[in-house]
Length: 207
Length: 339
Image (tube, rainbow over all chains, first blue to last red; front, top):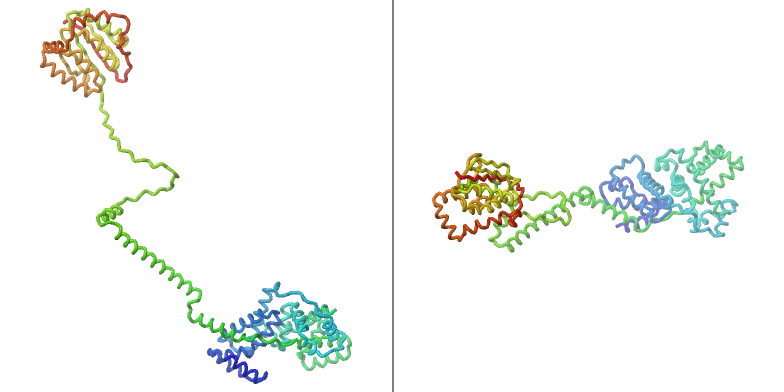
């Protein structure tokens, strides 16, 4: 059943429109098919966000599972005051932040492998010399993605969550504030400080 | 510095499209006119583009299956309630108690069967009554290791202590030769070392009274020594004192052997019984019979008298025992009279 739905979603393309409200009603009534549809709709985004925050695939998979189970079990308590998407991300991100803070000594590791000279030069050209190749081309390199993830890991957990939600999950400031339960002003300042710190970390790597 | 932080925050908001139209226009003018802000803006845009291009990572393939499976399992466990903590504990406790009860019941049944098989019917009643009537053993508070178990001793029956009366006797010797007999008595008292135990010597015309206070054994020795003068006596009599002061049992015609036997008695009751018996016997037995008895015993009076010199010796006889300071003080009164 799940594979069938997954195939349908893939065939339908990214902009497939599913009536989220009716799915939620069915899921609240205990319809497992509706539950599966909700999971399939959000699992990649939730997993990706958690992975970018915690930096470990196994932990991200476990935390994603926990978040979905918690959400489905408490679906009856969902009042609809915020969107389901925001509610789901709030639970997932808060659980991940708690996990990261609890396991901070284990999670944060130094940049182990030095990037090779070609990658360094490419990144330096893009960021400093501005004789840029196009960013998607740079980011296509797996090594660069890994470098960015590791740079993110060096950020403070709260700043990292805000940067991930904004730059990767593409949430607006209001959604970020709702998700994290903080003021918009705090979101702005955290984004500014987070990007500045990230720039310094990356410049330290390429120099 | 603070202005730069504010400008940087505004630039980030501008890049993210979070500024309203008026602020956006103002910031755009500032960027166009200020090369430093322009450079900062470019740098921020490049970092943002880099992050935007960081790429998406797809969830693991079976994540949805895992989530639904876990959900189903948890829903199932929550519904049954068997595995909830309190219910589980209660259930487990009840099961343990039931198991314990079953084991106890089984052990009881087995005991009854074993009892029925191995214990003979004849001894069952005894066993049951014995075990049931058994008194509770006193609780031992502590136990000494290797302590010897004290065997229960037989109860000793101690006879009631009979009261005893010291020997008090008056030996009356009537003779026709008072001087010789008196001399012989005095001699015997000397040889037996009882002269110093003689508390009084009362000499009256025709009568001499000796009062000797000594032990029983000394009295016996004394009478044995005096037995030689018996043939010189016309009559002999002994008064044996009773528990009542001044009251005596009188034994007439008493022989020296009888006197010795009376003095040898160990206690008052024996002594008084013997005195009574001898008093009755002697009452119905004439002196002639006694003489015949002496004759039958082949006693030679002359030889007895002939032994006097031996008794006159100043040396102590070998058989004469030393006077003993017995605990029981005996009082013997010897009266030698010619009347």
